[in-house]
Length: 93
Image (cartoon, rainbow, N blue to C red):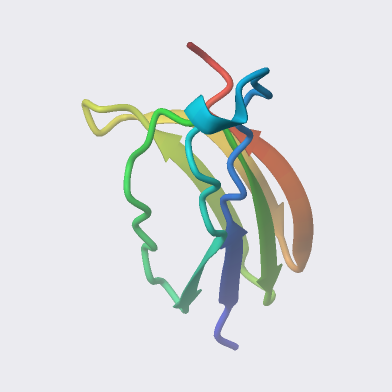
């Protein structure tokens, strides 16, 4: 059975500002999909955000954030079988 992945991602958390004119514009949420053994690549950013992750399938499913060096950084999700969850990304300065 093939696995399906949906990362409805990244409604960025932007700090509130007293001066709305100087605030950066809101970033539109983006969605990414993968099927089977696909590796879904998401563009790097330094902004904090929220990732809503959903997996349907029977196999192992893992989502990692990656360091600039290419090494795995934070394990955001790891499950055998179906998964649905929300995680904060880029929590470190």
